[in-house]
Image (tube, rainbow, N blue to C red):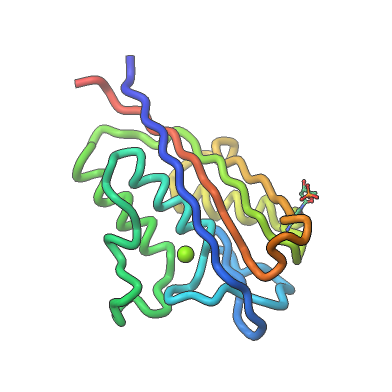
Length: 161
Ligand code: C5P
Ligand code: MG
């Protein structure tokens, strides 16, 4: 019997013209606005990284990558996910990530046409088969037209020991 652990993470960024919109490590083609952020503003990867850490009670990405640190300006969020994986590997070397399920809330543009690209990229980053990466896209129904928001859950398995 494995020890099962779930983690939950969330992130949001304000959108502004003239910058790329990066989600799950993918620059969304044709997006007119991108996230205002200290890093590359990849809300999906930030939510996933927080979920990964949360499952192991290892704090959050703001703790490990303070946005007051100039060294983190423009940071590629794939490095944040990689760092989270390293911290977890140190804490729980036998743990295996089993699944990720995420929701991105964004009014425009439609993300559906990019679902398979984002899922494949996220699967590659997390060393997961693509059928263990679930992505749901939602609008805010106009409630938050100037924001991108992501929420993610992850499931880990580790041998009881
Ligand atoms: O938010 P709402 O339920 O109206 O979204 C309808 C559908 O539009 C979603 O189920 C999703 O398939 C798609 N969608 C999308 N890209 C977005 C928001 C929603 O592809 N940015
Ligand atoms: Mg963020």
